[in-house]
Image (cartoon, rainbow, N blue to C red; front, side):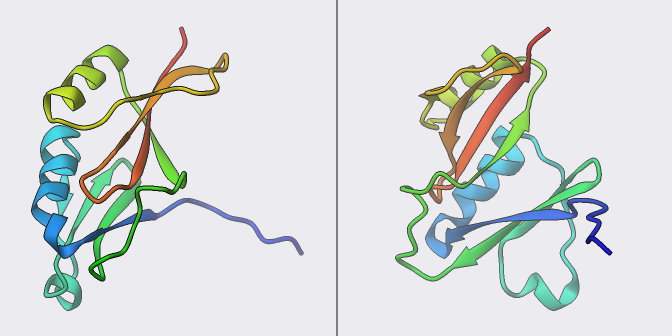
Length: 126
């Protein structure tokens, strides 16, 4: 019998402890993701959990010196208004990297969180 995946429950991004406050502001403030309570057993470890629809995003803390900046692993966040998203991210000081490989399903750009994690920001084409 083949394996059947039924849902994506969460994704996890890691940032250095020194970037925790900036990353929480980025995800909760700039992106507006609703923060949810972490289980008591994990609250002492820092970081934060967010939930949008049925998917959670876990912000975890990594060892000092961990590098995310050079990787292309990412999550794609769909937005209602790509221009407004770009303006909000620019105003927050986030880098904006144009789409190197445009295609017909959505328009997009890439940014990085304060810990260097890559995010694709996209809007479906009408």
